[in-house]
Length: 270
Image (cartoon, rainbow, N blue to C red):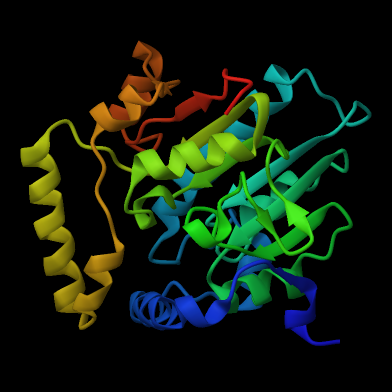
């Protein structure tokens, strides 16, 4: 069986070929295209890996998220399940870890066919689906219909882990995702920076362009976007890490220096 036969395609990959090519070239030059044995173990990684500190942060973010998810939805291993969308899943490591709970139905979604194929090959679980889909554009709005499927009111929870920066329009993204949530559902944004004002945002944009230029792939800067905290706040986002104890752990770099954002669908008539 082909690796790609394990991916469900709800969008046309041709539209994203150039973006995927540029993104994968960046990942290769950064040393972030991991072999299978490394991906299987994520978020645990060798201390000798140049990104070991980053993965310690991501592991702690994930473990706190999974714990909060279990507690807030009052779930146990034997309780009724929920459906989770991991948007911008990459190789699917986080989706795989969530799917360790057999009562959680997890969809790992991206428009990066190469990494989806790796995840589909490595993480074979009955409650884990790898899906190639653009959940934001007019051709694949979650509230609309694709051949054979409608995503409206489908998920209990959406998580974007280190991926929101690849979406240019935060308002459009959140609006689309709320449509695919069930009423009372939640969106969680992890491990991504937000900026206090336009000056900080512009400075970050310049750093991004300089970084990708030095890397030899300046085109990637057009696919990496910077969002203001005021944007997410105006959409109803709250920072679950806005507590003194967490801020201290972030200051001493025990936790990642990013907000943990939660947005909820409260309108039943989206």
